[in-house]
Length: 326
Image (tube, rainbow, N blue to C red; front, side, top):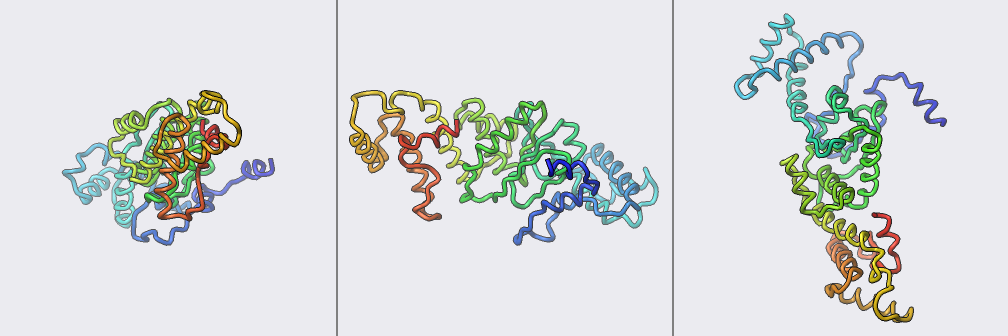
């Protein structure tokens, strides 16, 4: 309640509020144009002029064949509309690049879910036109642009094969589900809308609709053909598919130890241990889950402490971890 009290009384401009959530990335290229540069740091003086320039520039760029005109042609067309633009060349050149980025529309995966880029996340008009109320930011390097106007979840991860996305997919699923049930649209974005965000959307579709990885991947790619989850994310999606399959069968007699010949507690432990020692013998739902999890852990041991486990090896005695994903 105390937080809400102060949040309701904030009067600072959005760009100042957003600075509280900026990410300091040592590896960021200072010369790279990012959507973060869209933030307006001007005083009141000059804002009206730049707003006019921006509006007219967008209309011009949306009405011409961008493959057949130069930036000089666009500046001359702008001058014909609003008069002299001397002194604004740097702003116009930068704004042209911003508008080009924002002209790449987000992809509508479901009626309530958009998949896009940092440029889409920075486009205020587009966000409002698409009824966006929730924004899922799957990056370390891109900040939340409008924290006072949209509900955000920021997962600070990099686009590397070693990045652990899987552990975040319960949270991202719940966030997208909340947006769906609220009647608002959720924008899921990373930097380019290709790997981190697409993997997260695929994982959501698998869990929400009970789809296989192949079906979910094909469905999302049909609606955004540039997606390419990196190799590590594809392996995690395969693991996630196995865990989801196991969760759907967790009440089966085999999974709960109620099928077949009754055994003693010691016998059950011996059977479990033998399965772990022989992970490639797949003879039941329980064994298949153990096989998937063990293979995933073995692949990670080259890069991480071999003692750490993201999944329990004995699924029978710790099946609550599987149930959390259902």
